[in-house]
Amino acid sequence: MENGYDKSQLRDLHMLVEHIGPFREGTHLFREGDAFNAIAAVRGGTVKTYVTDTAGREQVQGFFLPGEVIGLNAISSNRYPCNAVALDAVTLCRFSFPNIAALARRLPGLQEHLFRLLSQDIGKAALLAGNYTTDERMAAFLLTLSRRYAARGFSAHRFCLTMSRTDIANYLRLAPETISRVLRRFQDEGLIKVERRELTLTDAARIEELARAVLRG
Figure 1 (cartoon, one colour):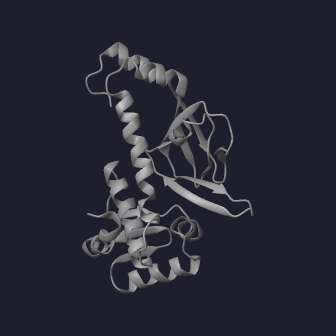
Figure 2 (cartoon, helix red, strand yellow):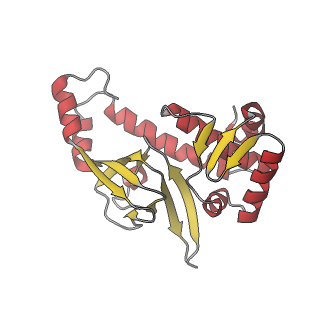
Figure 3 (cartoon, helix red, strand yellow):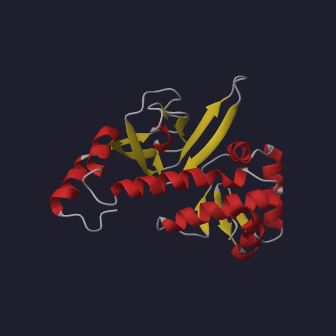
């Protein structure tokens, strides 16, 4: 995002950043209906977003890893449309949106970058749509995590599942026992190895094959 900016422009951009945290596991970063005034990039940890339906049931909307941005879906309504909670120790880079919006008018590419981030956020919901099998959904979930970690300089084959099995099940619209059963079968078949919360993709090619229908590539 910084390519092509001169020093004064970079100084303007960095002056907008407020480093906040760490937030302990279970801390809400914002709640549904709160007034929107900032977006934030996750520096460390994992953030879960969710809404609660009229019956009080939680519906997980997504998980955000280091380097990913939360709060973009609040731009249109000026209020956060969901809750965001820390799944572990979370640190953030917070950007005041009124200031960054004003800066985007002066910095070529910044507005385009924000739009690209928003489109990526929308794209994460793709694996929730369609009539896919539980194996296909789980493989797509794991492969998506793998690609997102790799894009941020982490290992594509070994990473931590900071989210609970219940949260994964909720996100994929499956039962928690189904998630446990599929992960156990994937491990028995040599596709993955699970040690507590650490997961290793031991047969990435087969995971990719299973995920192809969902991710289309």
